[in-house]
Amino acid sequence: MAIIQQAVHDSLFSRVAAASMAKETWEILKMEFQGNSQVKAVKLQGLRRDFENLSMKEGEAIGDYFGRVIALVSQKRAYGEIFADRVIVEKILRSLTSKFDYVVPSIEINNDLASLTRVKLMGCLQSQEERINSRTPKKSKGNDEHALQIMQDLNNTKKQLL
Image (tube, rainbow, N blue to C red; front, side):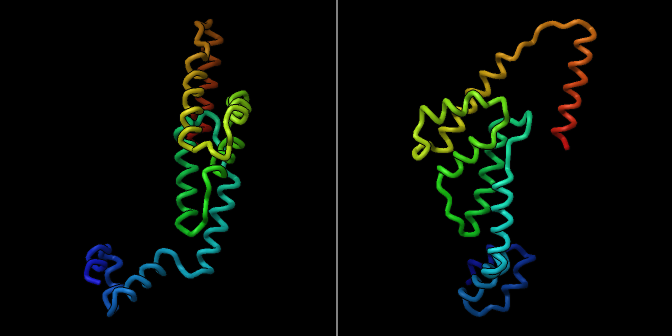
């Protein structure tokens, strides 16, 4: 019990200080962070909705998108949701931006989705993203074209910040 009490933050200590047994202390902390089964179910429902609605944003890097997906999956797992890599892989493949439209069928055909790990998928997609970014034409433009490109880039940046 002393170890648990030493490990909690000062703001939580007052809540567990009155407990007389380690199990009681643990139950207080468990209720504090997870809530009862009804609260868990409600939180899990919200996380499921967020997962279903999750999609990659225009201009977002693959690594950043994977980070958002994995953070959401970790939250769901913390509430007891069991998640296979296949579900994560399929969700990511369905929710990529249109710049990956030609890559997804290739990945689906050349890999068994049941055994494709999210780490391997991320590697494949990052290499494709680098290839796409390196092949983006950066031709010299006339003054009017250059000004229009700058305006478009600024608009895209504003959208990303929102």
